Length: 91
Image (cartoon, rainbow, N blue to C red):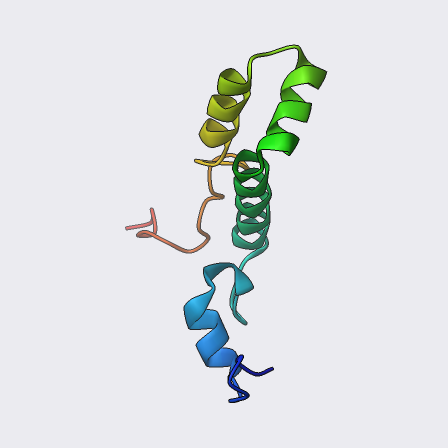
C-alpha cells in the first residue's frame, strides 16, 4: 500500500492508524465487536440509511439513532470470562 504521495505504508503504521484492523492476537469477540461497531457507526453516519431503518421499524429517526448508539456500547454482549485469571481455589 502507499500514501497519496507514493510513500509505502507498513502494516504497523496501518494498525496504529486504524484500530479495527486487528492484530495477530485479536480474539473472536474483539474482532466481532469491531465489526459491529463499524457497521453501526456507518448506519448512524449515513442519514439515508438511518431513515430507511426508521421507516422499516416504524420508529422515529431519533429513536433508531439512539438505539444504534446504545448497541455500540456492547454490540456482542458482555465480554467472555478470561481463562486462567485469578488465584486457584485450592489451599
